[in-house]
Structure formats: structure tokens, C-alpha cells
Amino acid sequence: MTYRRQLQSLVLAVVWTFACGGSTSSSGSAAPSAEPTPQGTVTQTDTGCTLTGVAGPMKPGYVSLNAVNQTSALAGFDMWRITEPNTYQDLVAYVAKEKDLAAAGQGGLGHPSFVSDLISAQVLPSKTGTLYGSVRQGTYAIVCLGPTGAGTRPLALVGPIQVQ
Figure 1 (spheres, rainbow, N blue to C red):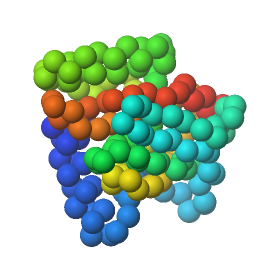
Figure 2: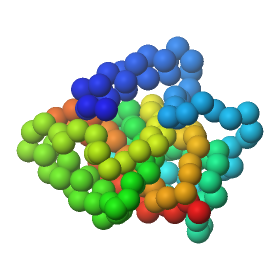
Figure 3: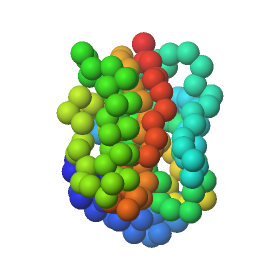
Figure 4: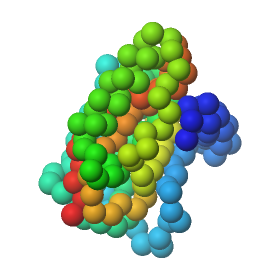
């Protein structure tokens, strides 16, 4: 997804959120009828992101994480599965490069080709939402997104999260 399209999605999410009075969440697949297994909390602040309550590997299946926005802007939380042979360190390097480009006011790299299984949530300022969807075996990370002078971009990364 290009950042222009992602920004459009975030704007639509804000409109939907105001209409529904809460947060928005989406998953790349249809939601199963079973209740998701709660996994922890990801929190975005003005200085970064943290992940708490995830002890050891997750089990494959339908999961949820609390998504806490402690900023004064709309925050995005994307959980991506890193496809082999790429590694978590490749995603760390991608986010670092995105941050450098945003700081310089330059265009972004676009959605990385080595991630899949997007699970996403957009949360209003000072609100809590839910990040939920299906995960399968592999290595995941959560990318925290927010506004920069160059548009909505990755601001921080938490992980790796193993699913076994």
C-alpha cells in the first residue's frame, strides 16, 4: 500500500471512528467466529512504541492486542509478518530509512515487499483500540505509524514477535 493510499485510509478511518465513536481495526482476512486470544498491549507515545504482556511465542490463530495511543495525533499500528529469507533486522533497517527520509522531507520507500499478513488499527489521540486478526507461524513486528512533515510514516517498531 502506498503512503498516499495509507493516508487516505487513515482519513477514512478517522471519519469512520467519529461515526462509530471508537477505534477502527482491520485484518487481511475475514474474522473467524471464535473470540481472539488477548496477547498484550502496544503503546505509542511521542517518543516511541512499547510492547508489554507478550511472553514467549504466540500460538497461531485469531489474536488481539490493545493498541494505546498516548499522542495528540491519530496513531496507526500495523502488525506485519516478515517473509523469509528476510529478518526482523531488515525491517529495523527499513523503518530507520523511512524515519531518515521523513526527517529530510523526502518521499517514502512505500510498503516493504518482504512483509505480509497485515493486521492494522488506527486509534484516535489519547484513546485505546484493538489490533486483531489471524496470525500464522513466522516472525512478526508491530510498526507504529504517525504524522510527520512528509505524511504518515513509520515512527517506531516493536518486536520481534514469534508465532509458533
